[in-house]
Length: 348
Length: 117
Image 1 (cartoon, rainbow over the protein chains, first blue to last red):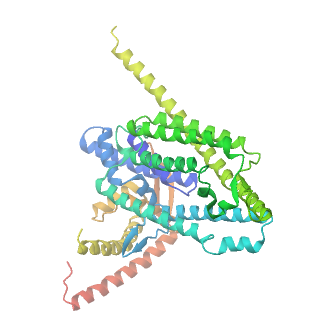
Image 2: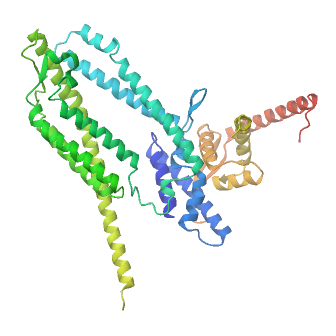
Image 3: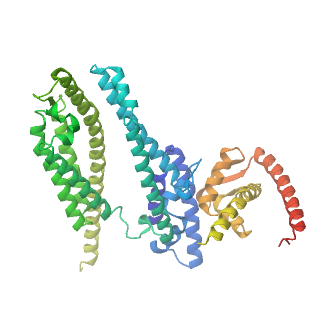
């Protein structure tokens, strides 16, 4: 029942925002039903079903994600002419949109709080937050981006349903053995843009400061930070390029990601004491006001951006560490199986 | 898929939704677990897929219309459902409503010249 176990595990993982007990209960009942079905089909076929036959039956039940979505109440849709986001995908859309908006509003409020804490007048903070673009622009961007992504997910779902395929139902499935190419290509694009941006910042500080470039300049913390960040970004691009040529090397991807993230955490720890990222330029028209602006910049970078980066990198390190352990276990299992097979084939 | 087929499928879905609840409640006057319940419904010509049945059973249970318990049968743990006293009362009222609708529909069909199969 290995295919069935994987299928049930995938359904359980898709049962988001539910208590563990409720998930267990649903999976137990669904598992019991599917076992009965497979047994009955086996009796009808006159033999115990193999994994390919089991997968063919499970495929009829639908993608684990869709099966899980049926257990969620209040399923709405997003329609404009036709249905853009159907009832199965809609709860996930709402959950992700809510999370994104909460994070965006949280970050903006944190920026406002920091600005107030360093003495920025309340009227100015209110102006930044409430006047266009202020808080409205990131919220609008999040809304559009998340909606477009989920319209794509809906299209993918329909395509998947027509094809009736599913990764976990593939009998040769052994947890993700290859990484989707589109993910690798997207990673290369994103990291290359980040590298280009980072490489040009010292030459073109306008990339950071915008119109304030006449008053502000990069502080002393940038210089020692520059080369290590370039190396980390290059490592990320090279790792993805290797993965593009050899998608089966997921252990390589996991190992490099773990190393890069750990090194990034080390750099963050190194600059935790309060680096000076931005200083007032000598040519600033109003040195006192500009010094104040630079202080806001430094505080926002340190407590706004870098604190989020801490959380993101820590989560990544944890996830990749678990993945490394999983790869190691699989490797050991593979070796053990190979040893047994060799033993079985060895002449007496 | 043609437009007519899409419209038909949507209307059929709406029509069946209420009927399925009625059928499930009626069948659960006798205690059963999900697998046998589905087979019984299918045998009676009422197709219902598992992804509809199990969430429906949970919804009806959360509304207090069904009671359930896990019990071992044939060396396997199964969740048995049965109609609760509230479910029985609601089912009786729903059946009355169903018969009334049925009679009304018959009359309307006769008047409009549609012969019911």
